[in-house]
Image (cartoon, rainbow, N blue to C red; front, side, top):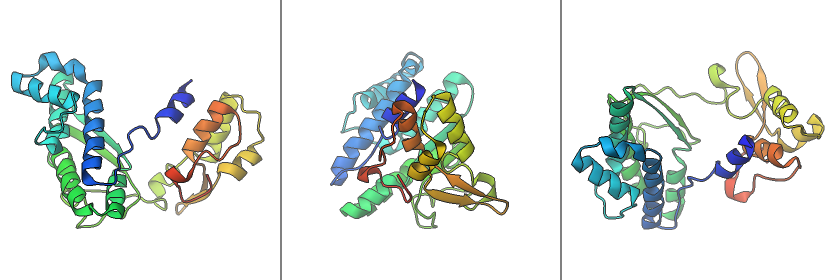
Length: 233
């Protein structure tokens, strides 16, 4: 079932750690897994490119230049497919929030600023980028090296209904998955926050909890303390 897979994989790429070395292990793991998804590229790479790609696949912790690996991957993908990449990054700022709380913020900031700048700034192999996060975008932040950023909040008219599942979407999902729970009860559990534009307000539902509800057909507090969200779980 699609919702069951969604529920299992929603936070599979969590990056954290008590130290910067711990976080780098997570980063190496995530980037290695990302390259493994595209290992069909290997036969079409130059020798030097193939060697580096293989080291990333093997999650080699001594590999220099890991901060440029996604930029190179975008080049390989564009070369192979003949189309520029669309980059989607969810919770791009979560590792920095964790690094701040653990005392290695500046080291993490330097790495991620280079990672994002090399991938997203003046990269001819990237067509469009979508970043989702919760921290304020500032001139001195991790995205400071990028140009032409458009920031949309929960009060932006264009995307006010895109920060969770809307009431209509939840009703449709419950019907499709034959959820035999009154919609008012679903709202009481998971309809926890409002998003508004100049035209209307939206009651937003937690996507993780709705995905789990559709998978298990049972009202529970799915959004636990590890994945805290401002609003009802």
